[in-house]
Amino acid sequence: MNQRKDGFRLFEYVLFALVTLAVLILCVCVGSVTIPLEETIQVVWRAISRQPQPELTCVPIILTVRLPRVLCVALVGASLSLAGAAMQGLLKNPLADGSTLGVSSGASLGAVLAIIFGITLPQLPFAGTMVMAMIFAFLSMMIILSLAYKLDASLSTNTIILIGVIFSMFISSIMNLLITFAGDKVKSITFWTMGSLQGTSYQNAAVLLVCLTIFGSLLLSHCAELNAFAIGEDNARTIGVDIRKVKLLVLVCVSALIGVCVSIGGCIGFVGLVTPHMTRMIVGPNHRRLLPASMFAGAVFLLLADLVSRILLNPLELPIGVVTSFVGSLVFIQIFYSSRKVK
Image (cartoon, rainbow, N blue to C red; front, side, top):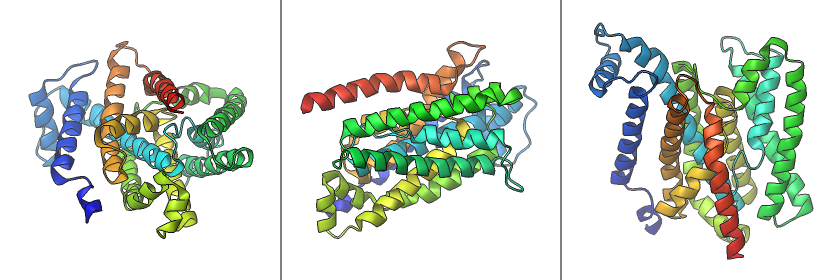
């Protein structure tokens, strides 16, 4: 009963959802061409209600370019943030994230292999990239955690981060070798590895929504187990948690979310590190509150990062991964320094 009271309340969901919606609308309005709020809402509402659109030049800009992009950005931000928060709870490590552990690099390698060798599935041209990214994300996580456990059975922060950095460098060297022989695909692969959601479609948004619904629901349904893991595996085992089953489930869900996001938006680093850390300071460490709050915070953070990437050097566009990595690296240093200071 107390656990239910400690969970996310309805008004909190509404508040976070309204903030996310406001930021999403802002990102649709603002860009290389600023569109008035009234016109934006009118066009989007008419599209939702299937009414004829007015003769406005902004209609194709909103419906074809910006709206699918901001939807994908919000869903990628929510997915990566949720994955990061779940990983941090499972590993009892505030620095755990797809980018710091090297999982995103592994997913990128899988996606690059799919692009170079033209691996596709019938009816879904981008599904081959997605499946390869998910598989390589999971394999990367298994390799990194196995190596870290061999070196340090306690899976300390320093060991995991060190293995993650070495693994990322190793993957980076392989990707550079592949890019050397990529021919005319070099430019698109290079820009994609820095993270970009330019040119994403409603189909991409639908895939992200389905994956977030499936794997996100599984993670949210295991908040109590993650709370137990945050105290310690012995504690979790004492209260009846199936350690192996929950670990495998969480790792599969996290790998799937990271793999799908990387296959669509490229390697967007530090989202899963920054937003759960900032959210934890607001709502506390209880995963019943932390996980849903992290989803909304991740969506807002990446929407704002994408907006900065579009307008900072207008008409040029920065890869979104550049913005998130800049912010994330500063937060990473702060978290690492704080954790060392506590010890």
